[in-house]
Length: 300
Image (tube, rainbow, N blue to C red; front, top):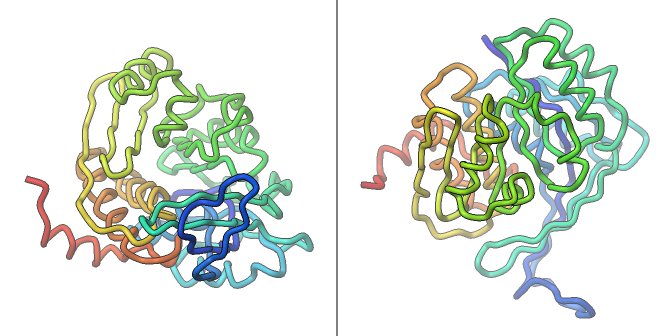
């Protein structure tokens, strides 16, 4: 069975419910505070595993984050290459407003450690049927990309958080880019979805782009086709982790199939379900829940 090797972050999410996002100079009282497992890497590993993929997670946690490994293990993720370090784990400070929208500040912690040895071991028997997934919350992505390409793996880059370090990576090695509108504009210089796709294909003619648009759905484009996926209408409670859920379920179906339209449909349904539950990793639905949801709703 093909595998997805996820070189990704693990974070402890500190979630504050707020009446509005805090402004410069403002002190704001939170109406609720909770701690959840998170980090884009952890969220996506759990989502891929719940979507049915065989997932290997490469990364690190501190002693304060050993419970994060338990979350991955419980989801069926292989944590052989998740190392325990003496430094603090990654942290995320998350504000969630009454509309379920979020604003996030992250602290890298152990996600910024050197993981070249673990990556080398994890990819030692990988082949062209496997995928490497990376985000931009860890260091060492250039090493991971070069190693994976030598092995013939397909490389997926979720370019979040977007900054100069992401843009300076060897992007020609990437097979699939997964970006939101802000990240897509930084990558292409365009803002409208059709212009984003046009500019992307001109620059990366051998790659594919998955553009997530929140409540407006998602768009897939490559040199041969463009596929649009509408969002499923739900009432959001907390949008934290929705993009990670989308990415995880998308890849869990693309790893063994070229049916992009069906993968997008399943990913959109999973993301819709996730925003109706608090938290990031804790909001990721099961494959059965997604199947049940799709049997009950229609976008026609």
